[in-house]
Length: 343
Image (cartoon, rainbow, N blue to C red; front, side, top):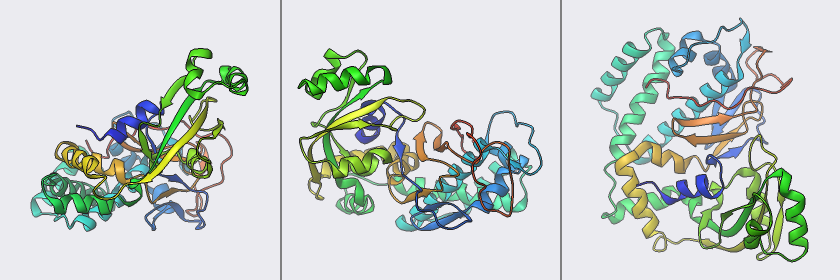
């Protein structure tokens, strides 16, 4: 059973779950992203994204011909998504005191030898750490039980910001219908009436269903935080990447769930751990603490194949320099549906 929040964002907001925060404050030249304060170096991303061996190990697709000294934007985002997940895994292994076993290490080494024998020793070490941490965390989380008070409490404490939630009504309006929607609102129409009055408008959230503020698209978070209760706010642009659709919303209420209030949701999280332990947990943890250098990407997304970083990123054709990400000189490629580094 999937946690309701995952379904909420994909169905109510009408886009793939846009998670994490974007990097408007990345100061270090050699920073591609930070994960709860831990830096992922741009020089490492560039090094791995420039390696035919590593990129081919990360994707089932045929490897594109690469020019020497050139980083492909899709490859850079794919590598960065992998490294973000690798750091998150290591942090959660420590949080849950998950034990990496000799069997885990042996299985990782065998997987790499079978599926990516072309990797260098240093690249093998990076992928092996990812694989062993993922298995150790999966084993630990799959043992969580809704029947154990200590497990519920540990999950509640680990999910901190998730319990700050907002109950709002929102409509998504395609660009062609924005003027008509604005006229209808000016005449006194309620948001809930817009889908009946204006073509292609969709009701994407109601205040009967509360959403963690940290799980909102980052561009929407500030608007929701500052919105007075009951006021119609919008149009908010930039919600849907690559689309000029806008959002109007009204905040009904805000709440912080206490441990007792969150019991039902915690029980559902524990149940999802038994089925999709690592994937389910990381989809919750990615909401907090991840900052991406804007030269590499705009958001971290959770999809069927794991984490991906969406454009903009290092553009195709940008020369590799001393390790710092080069300034954009045009549009990068679209987002990459990155698979795990080894299936």
